[in-house]
Length: 120
Image 1 (cartoon, rainbow, N blue to C red):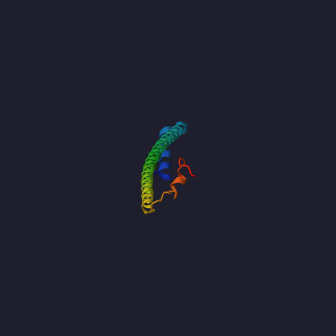
Image 2: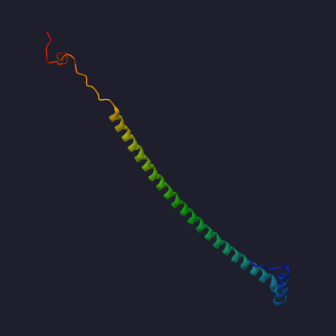
């Protein structure tokens, strides 16, 4: 966070000792340390919250991309299904057109197939 060399920290400690005196210096140092810890913890809390929000945004973006990909895939499946169905119908029509006409079975003797006609 701050860039202090060992010499600068030592100079600050000597000035604080001269200004505050040996009785009050430990108490002030503890208070300054506690304030520095609170500031560091607050800063870390803010950073963690920002990271969580960024992760949530990334997750939302990923979900939207997945939904879009799923919709595209669904459309592709519908198109392929329609093409297959059309191809099957065309093939069935081609088979019907290419098949020889069917001959219905007609009895050679009409009296044999007619139940109302008596044979003698």
